Amino acid sequence: MFTISNAIILKGQNLIPSRENIVVDEGKIIEIKKDAKEGKIIDADGAVACPSFINGHIHIGDSIIKDEGYGLSLSEMVKPPDGVKHKALANATDEELINAMQESMWDMVNSGTTHFIDYREGGIEGVKLLRKASKDIPIKPIILGRDDSFYGDDPDLSKVKTALRKLLKVADGIAPSGFGEITEEVASLIVSECSKQGKISSIHVAESESNQIESLNEFNKTEIEKGVINEFDQLVHLTNPKNNDLELVSKSNPNVVVCPRANATLNVGVCRLNEMLNLGIRPLLGTDNVMLNSPNMLRELEFTLKVMSLYYKSYINPQQLLQMATTNVCSFDVNNIVQKSVIDEGYSAEFIIFKSFSKNPYLNICNRLETKNILYTINKKCIV
Image 1 (cartoon, rainbow, N blue to C red):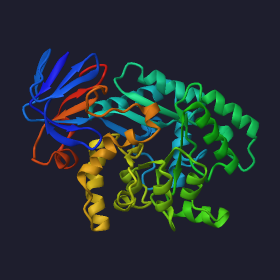
Image 2 (tube, rainbow, N blue to C red; image 1 turned 60 degrees about the horizontal axis):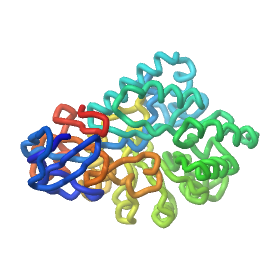
Image 3 (cartoon, rainbow, N blue to C red; image 1 turned 30 degrees about the vertical axis):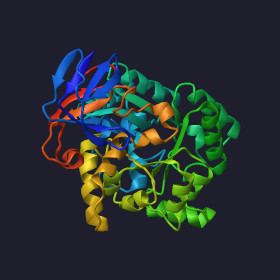
Image 4 (cartoon, rainbow, N blue to C red; image 1 turned 120 degrees about the vertical axis):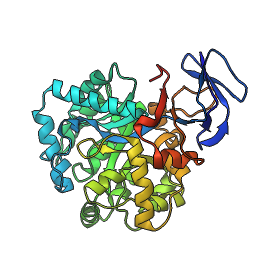
C-alpha cells in the first residue's frame, strides 16, 4: 500500500484537475481524498498525476527497419505483400523481431505508455511472437491479427473462416490492412466472427486520397462508408474523408484512431481533428509504424497540438487532446478487451507522475514534457 500525496491529479474520464491524494493497494486505487494517507508516502511535490498513455495504433513488428524507405509512397512502404515492411518481416528471424519489438516496448514504458493496440502481421505465429516478446515487460499489448488467406479478388471463404477462428483463439481481434486488399465478403466475415467472440475488428480507412478515389470509382462508396456499413469496431486514420463521411462516423460511433505524425511522414494529409471533435467523435492517438516514428506518445501529442493549429488555423483544446492519449478508449466497447483505467476510486492504478512546468496541466504534458520529466509510472503490477 502507498499514497501519492501533494499532486495535481487529472481525475476521471474528463481529466478534471484536483488536488487530492491517491491511495493504492494491491494494484487498485482504493481512495482519493485530500487528507488520505496510508502506507508508504510518495510526496509528488506539486507534480501532475495523469492516466497512463494508450498507443491506439501501432505496427511494432517493423521496429526492425527504423527509417528505411523514407520518401517512398504509402503503397511502396506498407502495402502487402510487396511493401518494404512486408519484405523485411519475411526475411527477419524470430530473434531479430523479438529483440526489436522489446526495444520498442521499453521505449513506450519509459515514456508513460501502459497499453498499445498492435496490427500484427504474420498470422498466428506473429501473434505468438509478440506475446512472447512482451511477457516480462510491464505493458499490455492488444494484438489484432491477420492472415494471408484474407487477400485477393476471389478468396476461399471457407479458408478465411477457418483462419479467423484459429487466429481468434490467440489474438484480441482481427485487423486486415485495408479495403483495397479484401473483398466485402471477407470484411463481413471478419466483423461477424469478432462480434461472436467478443473480440475487436479494426481496419485502415481513407489513409490516402487515392484510396478514397479508387473506392468511390469501383464501389460508389468511400472506404469510411464501407467501414461503417460493415460495422467494424475500430476505424484507423480517416485522413481524407469525402462527402458526409465524418457525419456518418459520428452517428454510428465506431472507435476512431488518428495518426498525425505517420500521415505527415507519408505525405498523405492532415486528419480533420477539430471537425471530428465538433461532431462529438472521441478519437484515440496512435504512433503507427515504428519504421516511421518512435512510439513515444509525448512526441505525438506535441506534434498534433501544433500541426492542427498551423494547418486548420484553429487551436485544438489540449484537454481533449490529452484524453485521446489516455481515457477516450474508456467510452467504447473495445475497452472490454483493452481494459484501460482512469484515475478514480475502484479502478486499476495506471497513471504517470509528471514534473510540472506550467499552471496549465494539459499544456504542461502536451507541449513541454519529455521522457526525462516522468517521475514515476504506476501500473497495477509495479512502479516503474
